[in-house]
Amino acid sequence: MKSVPMTSGAPLRILLSFALPLMVGNVFQQLYTMVDSMVVGKVLGINALAAVGNGEWLNWLVLSMIQGFSQGFSIRLAQEFGADDISKLKKTYVTSLRLSIVCTAGVMCFAFAALRPILRLLQTPDEIFPITVTYLSVIFAGVPIVMAYNFMASVLRSLGDSKTPLVAMIAASICNIFLDLLFVIVFRWGVAGAAVATLIGQALSAFICYISLKSIDVVRSPKNERKLDGRIALDLLVLALPFVFQNIIISVGGLVVQFVINGCGVLYMAGFTATTKLYGLLENAAISYGFALTSYVGQNFGANELRRIEKGVHTGVILGIVTAAAISSAMFVFGRYIVGAFISGEPEDAEATLNIAYHYLCIMSAFLPVLYLLHIYRSSLQDLGDTFMPMISGAAELIMRTGSILILPKLIGTEGLYWAEVLAWAGADVVLITSYYVRMARIKRAGSRGV
Image 1 (cartoon, one colour):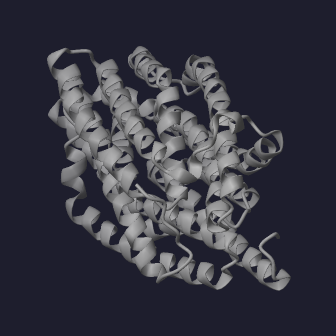
Image 2: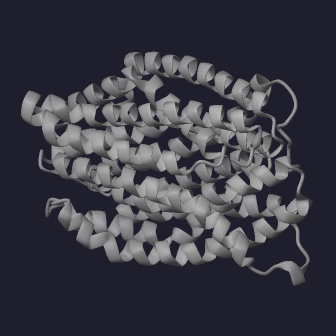
């Protein structure tokens, strides 16, 4: 695949042509995530589904740290590609690759050290504790695979290539679904089988990205220039660490939510898990628009095209709101049937779990545009070189999420459990939207992209 400049042409066409392959790829990614949960829920039962859901936020904490480093490193790559500074781009790529290896080791050590203590802090019910440990242990063993895919996909996207990650994700999804059925239903490996299937699929996607990356000239370097540059490494860490801290802060809020849900029993845990597995599908286009704007804003910022940035972000906002409204409508009509596919068990328990799941889904769907604005403004702000305020937005999410889940149930009963996520999105939006327009105003006043 060739790298694609985004510093000329209509923003709508560029954003759509970049985002649509990502959406298709994310649909396939969510498809195999959903199949994982469907197989676990239907074949292994409500306890197994609750166990996988119980580990969701801890799993996301580890994954988000990986994504934080990958996204942070890719900011500089996009800016240097936009500025056509190929010599520096090569050095940045080599340094980010070396840093990724070091970060992988650190994240993996943290994951295994934190596994059991955090599950205990969450007051994980005894009947699902060993199932959750088994599932997450296998997933965490694959941290190097996850980092490899995320790093290479981020590099490709920063260079304007969203099609290779699409091909990689489609291949991974097909592989994962086949192996899910084989390992869980035929081999009867339980939740460990679902985890192994996921890792093998991710390994395939990483390999496909690697093959594509090898063919791109702008990241090739002679062997004698493949050393870690200390100054560049520090610059990359300054960009990436706020991403990581932002995601850790968000994860802490999610873990508090999981703690409260765990206290409500296995039916609530299973119901929330069923809806959480659809969360990725709801968020799919938002993530894709966010990645598109990450590359678009980064390249145009590198080229000092401020008017194009404003026009692109405005276009992204309109796209996001329209897309969110369409997805919300679909969930209101078909959502109950979709979440029902995850749930099995005694009729009374299954019906109660389904009611919990669908109610949660309806509330999130009604406020989906709020989530889409979060992704659009956060991605745009980050590639303007500001990773601090997005980190503060993560703190706003933490405050709103934990405050809501701890206070609202005492005021309005179990209904309060459903609102923590939506209020967290709203809190982040206030910070991000305000910060974006303030930063753009400062950059335009200074007349320089160096602000």
